[in-house]
Image 1 (cartoon, one colour):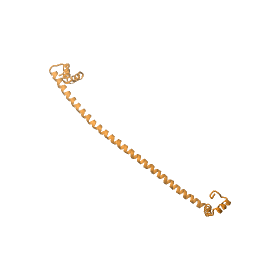
Image 2 (cartoon, one colour):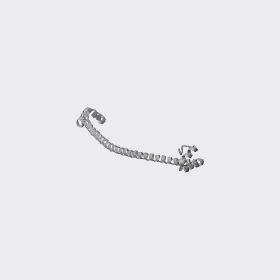
Image 3 (tube, one colour):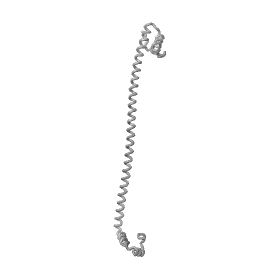
Length: 161
């Protein structure tokens, strides 16, 4: 009833029963009569509320920024791990490339040697008066060539003077 009534008779009755409310009623009445003071009081409360709201929003944004920073660190770690894996695979590919190039070089060397030997055998057969077919059979027998390859070699190295 202290704050809920504005009937003067009820207020007087309340003050008779509870005399210590009188000072409170005077302060309340004085505050209500001075609208500017009441507005200042509300303005101050609103300023405090605004400041608290702004601080709360700042705290929330800082927490979000920290969370995003942690997520970025995790993603950076994942990227670094993937980079390391890619570098390892790249190194493996380089080793394989070197091995493959070595095999290509060996095959080229063997091919040159095969051609030299084939050329010598074909030339020897020609000098002995053997036919091209006989030269092909010699290549098959001595070098283990298949007949088609032997025929190509005879065709390539048979010289007609």
